[in-house]
Image (cartoon, rainbow, N blue to C red; front, side, top):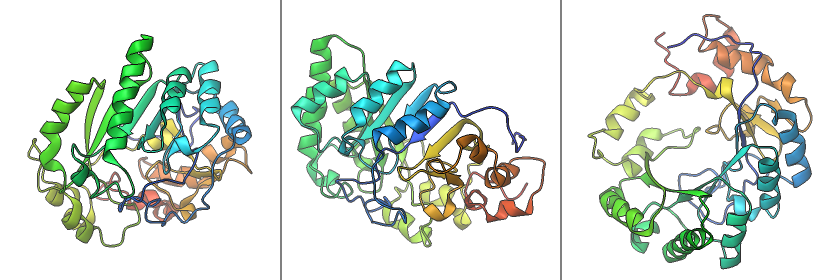
Length: 313
């Protein structure tokens, strides 16, 4: 594991700026869908977006305008995309694509959005409904097909479109069908990711038995390798603490995009200067976990319980 400094002079080049923490779906493993965010439900208005963005724009390569909600529920989302593009910062959005109307598809293409992730974990309505509660499979597929067709008619390359398929026990048998369907409709990227559990879930073993597939095509045994003794067996250095900033729509600064509870915030970007937060005691304590420096307060950060931190070192 690489050893790193705890106080750094560099700034984040990736901004994860959650523009809204409300959603039209009720996915059972999502803290938004289960109403367990422990954070005010709100949206980021354009003025506050601009204030946060302007403070970091000279360092940014990309801004992800989503995290714990459906970004197209924010009426200012297209202004935000256009503003970032005007400052030569790439933009990315992840959407369940349920609330989109045909006119919205034209706006998505015209906005300058560079990358769109479509969350779609099935190839049939029956399997889709097991996780994407309150969603409609046919609506998503129709929107995805129409978006790809409109982009082709306009002869533009963006947004690049990724079909993201979260692999679970209920849908693992549809992976090959998803690849075939993705090729048929012409998405740019087909990505499979393992289902994840909420950060603060007390009984992860029980949820793992309910949701984790036994294995995937690579032979990866999710139940054995991911949650053995409650810890992940896949250890690596955490780059979030050094390269990215995660800011919630209420201004709360999280250590990474996985942590959602406001009790773990490292500061608030609306009430404090981000430069001060970036190297404050909480950030330094978290970075100490991946440093030669030992700080007792490091155990009090959410990062101490993260599977990325190998406590054996």
